[in-house]
Structures are given as structure tokens and as C-alpha cells.
Length: 447
Image 1 (cartoon, rainbow, N blue to C red):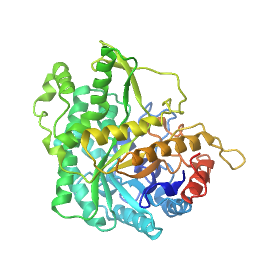
Image 2 (image 1 turned 180 degrees about the vertical axis):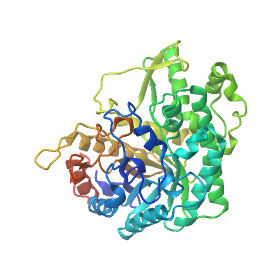
Image 3 (image 1 turned 45 degrees about the horizontal axis):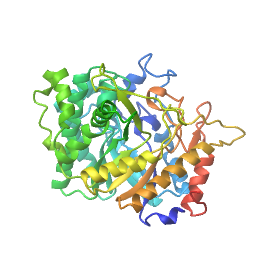
């Protein structure tokens, strides 16, 4: 099976995020983001690093687009840094910030690479965080204003728009567990954040449609199939609650306009006050054009009565990435089928999929054979999904090049290209990038 077995208009791309690659954290009028503040706080990042320079994509974007062109991809998913456009979150527009992204988009189009623009990939303006961040409904209003600014500026240049990247991470990972900026650990706060994100998404889609902007709009969710460790009723119950928490807490509002009732009741029982004013989520279900799915692994859980969700993770014996995540390509097809069967035949994109591995640069080369096998097996799973009738329209690999990997700093390497952080930030082709180039030229198969 070769690339030609996929639909001729299939999008093959890579994905990145602004804070992870751009650098230039305080240049040309950019304001401070919550990740600037978080990464500069001692003890938050494993290696004590930050994204001040990162891959210096802000200054090297033409070089990076050239790499994409040589890679033979036909689409690029990137995010815009909100504080680069509105340094304080709203108010006066920073023209230099808009000009940077316009130049990037024009460079992509000149090289026949379709842009997919993500409006928000976690770098909230710090000024808005001072006023409560995503807990404050006014942040949702500011987000819509920011989104409209980009819709107006890039109308006709961008065909695919995503409102948010991984609202589960924005809410639960960042406000319940405190692992990501702004580093808050409070369950009710996380639930309020999730609600406000969904509301902001719905209002943004509504405005996009009503004002007739060109292109299509959707959202990107990190999803994973949830398996029970055993077939006991207790473990199956645990799997259902974890599925509600990991997947359906966002899927149900987006497609049905309601929260999953069984989990909502659990939260009422544990955090009764949060439910006041947060039950109605019907505004989230404005009709989207597509759903983006970020898939990395599955969850295996067993029953635990001491947990709020009555579930705890189980580490099964398996091959794993450097993040400790099980390599489970079958799960990609499983989650695509779950969404297709439960929510209808909406167009889908795999907006992120990739593996962190212990890559080493030796004599100018990186022999990451494990990443090649990872991609082959996940491509096969995507192909099988298409063959089964699922409307899958594109596949974006995470990520173009090694980057600032959030709380892991520069210790985890997901890239198709190695970046020399010790010296000059030189990009080096890994074997996986060379293989992908040949696959997209129809020169190699998935065998």
C-alpha cells in the first residue's frame, strides 16, 4: 500500500504550536503569555528551560517552509500566538504580529502548502490571566474579538480554521492537575474553564458562519479509546466514566449540546457549587465543518472506589514511547470509529499523531527507525478507517521538528527534523523525514 491508495485530495501535513517553536518571545510588540510566565517560574519545567528562543521559527520560517516543501507535504497546521496580535488580550492590534503570520501564510501558499490555522494553542495573554483567565467569561468575549480579527485579516487565504487545541488539556491538565500554565490545581476551576472554552468555541463558530467568512471551521480534541482492564462490571463502569472525562465531556456538548449526564452528576455530588450557571451548554453545539482529532495512545483503567471517577490507570506490558505512552496504532481506528458511530459522519482530520523517542544525532544523522514503524502502522490504521467509510480527510504528524515540549522542556523529541540546541539551531533530516518524503512521492509502501 502506497500513498496513492489514499484519496487524491487527502491532506498530508505536519503540525506545530506557536510557543513551542517561534521564540522571539518579547520582540516586535508581542505581549507576555501565560507560558512565558509559567516557563520562567522555577520548578515548572523539567530541564529549567523556556521558549524564549525555541526553534527561532519567527526568524527562520522561510527556511522551515522550504523544508516542508522538500518533505512533499501539502498542508501545515500551525497556531497563532494571541499576545503577538493583542499584547494585552484585547484593545489595540499589534500590526507587526499580524504581518508575521501573513508572511508565513503567503510563503506557504507560494509553495502550494495549505495552511490550517489554530486560533488558540495554549498561550493566553498574561494580562487576561491577571483578570481570571479562562475562569472569567470576559476572556471568552475577548477570544471571539481576537478570532474575528484573524478571520478578517486572512479571509480567503486560510481555508481551515480550528478554534481551540485540546480543551481537555487547557482545562484539566492546566487547572485541575497544574502541570501546564497557569499551573492551577482545583477541580471546580477546571470545570468552569472547560465550560467557558466550549462557550467561546460555539460563539466563534456562530460569528464565522453569520458573517460569511470563507473556509471551514472546527475544533481539535485530544481523544483516546478507553479500555477496561478486565471485563468485570466494575471495570467497565470505570472505563465508561473515564471515557466521559477524557472524550465525551467535550464531544457531547459539541454535537449534542449537553454534558454526559452520568459524569455531570458525579461532579454535582462532589462540587455542587460549580454547577450553578454551568448546566446549560447548548451554545457549544453550533454546527462545525470538521473535527480535528489528536491521537497518541489509549487508556486502560480499572475500578477504584477512592477516585472521583471510580477509575485508575493500569500500565499494561507494551512497547512505549519516551513519554511512557503505549504504542497502540489500533486505537487510532477505534477512536475514529467511535466518533463516526456516536456523532455522525462529520469530516475528520488527524490533527496530531507522533512519537517522542530517544533520538541521537551521530555523524550528522538520526536513525529513528522506531518512528518510521510508528508512522507506518498508524497510516495503515488511518487507511483502514477510510476503507470502512469514515470521512477522514487529512493526517498531520506531530511534529515538524524537535521543539519546546511544554513541561518536559527540550528533553522529549517528537520532530521529523533534529534541531541543534547546543549551537546554531541547525535542522537535520532524520531518517523518518527521509522516509516520509519518499512515501509522499509514492516511492515506498507501508509494508
